[in-house]
Amino acid sequence: MSPEVLSGLVQASSLTTLVATAIGVLMGLIVGMIPGLTISTGIIILLPVTFVLLADISIALLLGLYVGGMTGGSFSAVLINIPGTPSASATALDGYPMAARGEAGRALGIAITASFVGGLFSFLCLYFIAPLLADVALLFRTQDMFALVFFGLTVICSFATKSLVKGLLSGVIGLAIVTIGQDPVMGTHRFTFGQVNLLGGIHFLTALIGLFAIPQLVSNLTYTAEGMPGGVMLQIGLHYVDVLMMLMGPVKRVSGMASQLVLPGDNPDVGTLLMTHENGAVSSLSTSYASASDYYLVNVYGKKMSAYYNFFDGLRCLKQGDGEQTPIAIEPTDTLAEELIEWADAVRGGQPPEVGGEGATDSLAVVLAGVKSVAEGRHVAVAELLEG
Image 1 (cartoon, rainbow, N blue to C red):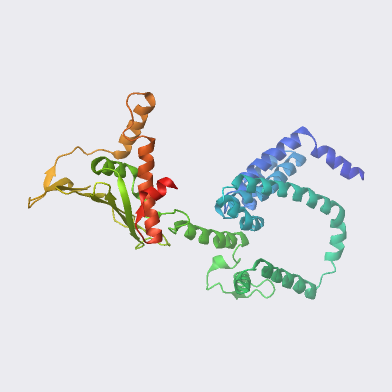
Image 2 (image 1 turned 90 degrees about the horizontal axis):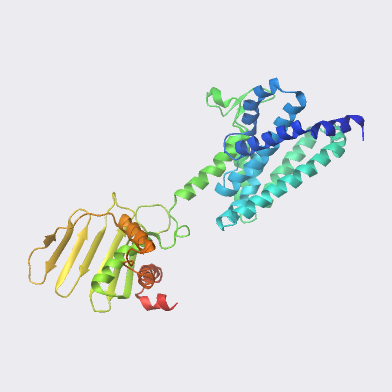
């Protein structure tokens, strides 16, 4: 080992250098995990600080920021499917699906371990192979550069295992983005449309984040059945089912109806439960994500009297033989606050809960029976859910 390399290792192993490297790595992780805040930006922000530091500490600080930033890009790639750095784009392909399955910790662990091992391997390659590669690079000619670029384009096909057309199309889009700006040889303006800001072209990281972020944002806004099984039917709270079962008795059979009207995606945003009670009464619960405002409607149809409730008109009853509905004065309350107070009193032993564990299970079975009814297009007996 040459004396210069040995001296460099001694300087890199000093306490101050290691502390500077650790600080740089921490800052790099923060910079890298924020999409759009590039490693170059972090180095530019940190560069004035190095003016008052020793050379070895400054280099350790900047190197730590660079390496930490490369690793930090994997955090956003795994968690939100938006790579923080260009190198993290490959991490998003496997890391985000793992996070969606609840394996985010394992995905981040694999990414950090791979980054550490890859960093050590690249360091050894740089030390032993870089001098030889430098000699080879000086021999590169135009045809060699073309072959290298063509090889990079063919690699796209290996990622497009499901659709070769999509892979080729993504390559064409990438080439189209690269051609924007000023020609490096002739100085010709290409696809700038008179905009001075486009003379420098479109930054690679900007295009990458846009191509990854926009589809992910659109996907997050889509109201999918995979993201929320049952859709709007789960908006029918157990509290309202509890009230109906307290008034009308246990529910025997449920018929659910739902439709997708307004929200994008494949999940219903309006729905109704039509319930047949064991005593022969019929009740219904309706809910909607597509309405312009919060609105709850509860209808109870009995043999001698029917009751109707909504947010705006309050509680009204219609007795058999009456021609008009009779309003009943009730005090407006917050049902969520009521449930929390009731739960707190039950925990403290002040009073038993309105609905015990078995009753809550029955109410949940009613809602799930409605979800199953919508999915299968048939009446569903509550007993099917309770027995299953």
